[in-house]
Image (cartoon, rainbow, N blue to C red; front, side):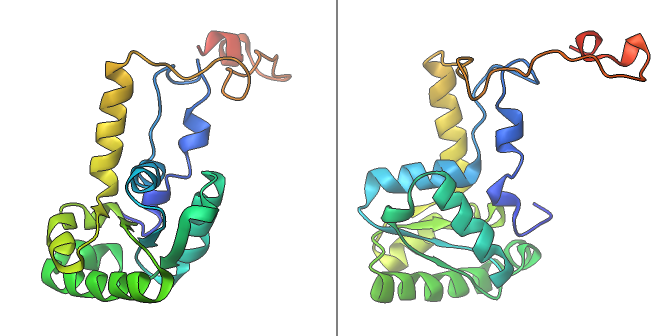
Length: 180
């Protein structure tokens, strides 16, 4: 939680290939919150930290294939440290941005776009009257569900482990077949 972009989990795609690290499902907090919001509302918005997070949040929505369902990405004046140090102020700022997303953008649910906002969803739901998704809780529950169902990442094509290759100029103990 040291970066306002931590919820975007840029390493998710790098972790998914089977055999690289694990065959178990890898669940990102941003992606999980979008999937949960998608099940609860026809349109939803992401409310996140500083304005510099907007582009990455929009790209995450696009990569998840949910652009049509996303009403907006709203940024705030909050840094990650702000979300963790002054919770009352964080609730006020998030409520204001969320109210705009509901009134102006047609959002019917809100995805909290930072792990530092975790635990604030109940307070915000009471104020807003719409579902508010805690991205960390959504990811944990989604991961628990996938494990409970006994699912593994598909090895068929996209997330198949890369082929073993000889790395020229490196000693045998540094070759990829010896690192697995």
